[in-house]
Image (cartoon, rainbow, N blue to C red):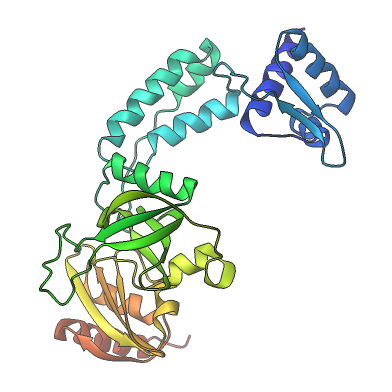
Length: 329
């Protein structure tokens, strides 16, 4: 009986996590036969849960519309929640404290056995040298962008300078408020980006969310496919995402005989790629030593010119000489 009750609770948890489940998938997840799943569904219905049977080749079961569930976690979900809340990136103002409070709230809402499992998993986060999250974002602004993406509503957004200040209208780099269609909200390398179609420039762009000051509108927009149809590739290969060099003991740059889209895709976090022409770009990157930057530039396996500053040029030559002296055996 205990085994049956546990399985029924897991079935209820699965039904609450997705709009619709085929019978075969439910049976596989629970490790039982289809007949047993049907029997457990009837058990849940007898307890008052509105579970709808969906007929047809893609049919199965779904939880009734508008039916609310108590907080039901199985063991793996409880551990996943504990890990996620303890390792959430601190890219929103106040998120670290909010995540800790959310974890405490969840722990109080689950059964004692799951609470013990969650409390036993204490995580200490150590920052990797290559993590370069952007400045924390105001949750209200992130919510405004996220709501516009979900509701497909046009935003009027002002693009800020890298230091977070508004550009002077007399400056050459002044960016007036733009009308944009926000299609995708993306998190990559500790930064929040929004993939937009710029209505004023008639082009696709990738913007850092922390560099935008969005104003919602009531104008709706339709679906558009990102260029190439691959969202991840488009974001990673866009060199003008608004990134700035991360603080390092040493920072240098070089002109590479590769297009900006190629270098941007593989450049380390905290670097900046500038378009020069169709076949060349400039990469600015930092490291703990000049030799470290030389090694990073070498990973692109292409010709370099206009290496700056002189310390980086000397390090490149020193590394090249050192490599030529490696014994063959």
